[in-house]
Amino acid sequence: MSTLSPVSPDPAAGTGYAPDGGPEVPLQRNRPFSRANLVQTIAGGYVPLILATLVVVVPLLWMLLSSFKQPGEIVTTDLKILPESLNLDNYRTAMTTVPFGQFFLNSLIVTTVGSTVKVILAILTAYALVFVRFPFKNVIFVVILVALMVPPQVSILPNYILIAGIGGKNTLWGIILPGLGTAFGTFLLRQHFMTLPASILEAAEIDGAGHWRRLWQVVAPVSLPSIATVALVTVVSEWNDYIWPLIITDRPETMTLPVGLTLLQNSEGNGAGWGILMAGAMLVIVPILLVFAALQRYIVAGLTQGSVTG
Amino acid sequence: MTRQLTDRPAATARAVTPDQRRGRWSARTRRDFIVFLALALPNLALIAVFTYLPLINNIYYSTLDWTLGSANATVVGFDNYINFFTSTDAPTVLGTTAIFTVVTVGGSMVLGLLVALALNSKVRGTTFARSAVFAPYVLSGVGVGLVWLFIFDPGYGVLSWLLRGIGQQSPQWINDPQLSLVMVIIVYIWKNLGYCAVVYLAGLQSLPKDVMEAASLDGANGFRRFISMSVPLLSPTTFFLLITTMLSSLQAFDLIRIMTPLGNGTSTLIYEAYLQAFGAYNRAGYSASISVVLFAILLIITVLQLRFVERKVHYS
Image (tube, rainbow over all chains, first blue to last red):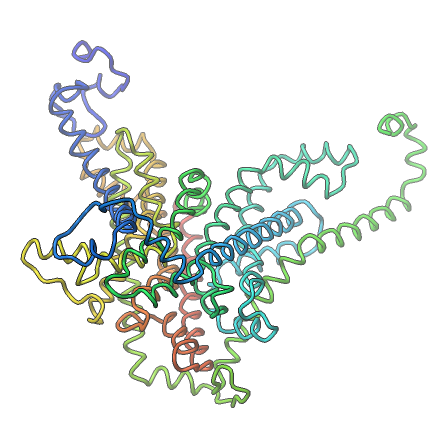
């Protein structure tokens, strides 16, 4: 049996059953390059994989291609898959019809300021919860856990009344402020800080380091992957945030990209405007797509947190 | 410094201790108290003001007959709730919410599991496919909604071309309320199934290998093993996904707002609450009462989750 498959790293092959087949597997199938094996690998492995990938990639590719198409190429009786040229007119039109540059800047400010403050607050709170002595820490932790489960959507009306009441309507701080408290980041970092060995902090304490130095010189540096996870998930959600900026801004000067895209939709919502809208969608989607492509490991880990531990 | 401490005779150290050390302890406790508040208070205060306070305010607003922006509000007790549940809106909104939630949760979990099985195969390229499938989950709902609105466009969309190719007319996705709901559901599943797939993949990869091998030794084929081994063993993952996807489906807003701004056929609880307060009517009190109903539903699901998670821990 083993002579049939000279190189068999899989111990199952030698004993006559394959992990993905029944016990009465014909010996042929155990040969790595036999026709049956090849067909099975392609049909069972590659086809579903390629299918799943295409379902995701094709609509996004369609957005990219359409963003270069002129109205004449979209409003036509025969489908043109590729644009005639890499014409940037749609991008130009999108940016002049509505102040896209301003939206981009606003989104950049909201995301940068919001994420930075949130990450710092999460680090400080998580450190306090784990390493500083305080009587009601468990109660405070429960308060944070419950806040994690309160959906922001049910708070929009009261928060609108509150923020509009203190003059935050159509301001960037009005967009940023209500989202600054962070239960998610605090929770995730606390869970991570709990796993740090006490010895590294004791060493720092004996050296006379106070809490501030212990936090920034010992705890934070060894927790960089977790902090990166929190930071990236925060950046993604701040950039994409829609319902709150939509409600608290109605003037283009303070709109973020997703809200601005709605404005563009209102002015270009006819057949000829699809190319322009796709260009606008590109400007919103591509920055996050690039961040995701570069750092997806952290983002996936952060967003699916809790799934394995329950 | 350390040298001095260790070199100091033990007797002298003990001689000074009791009172002084207690004094030092309480000073340290006080210092820790202040340090804790300095570190945690800003975040806790923000959470209190923008997460907890709105819950209370929502309940209060829900008892008012109040137009947003108006200076006058009259207390009407439970009238908003009674109005909502006795109106013709209630069956429509609750029905839409139920259909949207059940179909999106079921659809993204079943398809997510199938994609996870594909991702779990031992071929090259699974890492890339995994990232690709997950990508829509992190993209802006507004951008994604526009892209799909173009695809569904009855006049110039790709879908209408494909349908014309097989001699069919494109359905009126935008104007027909029922088809609008179908359209939004399809796009929502497209955007979220990658999340389910990745979570299921983690579950599949943590299945005990020896048990699976024993099953195949006993003669169970791939499908049989999947149904009677993988699916039951994945039940904690399934339960986790059921809860998380249900909570997010109940809060779905971006796609509905972009694809069907009027909420014609797609007005779920969250969207109705938005429309009532920020749409044409500015009915703040009425909107708040719908938000409270939504929150109550979310709360029940969360409590159920906590109950079952305890049981699940015993199980695994």
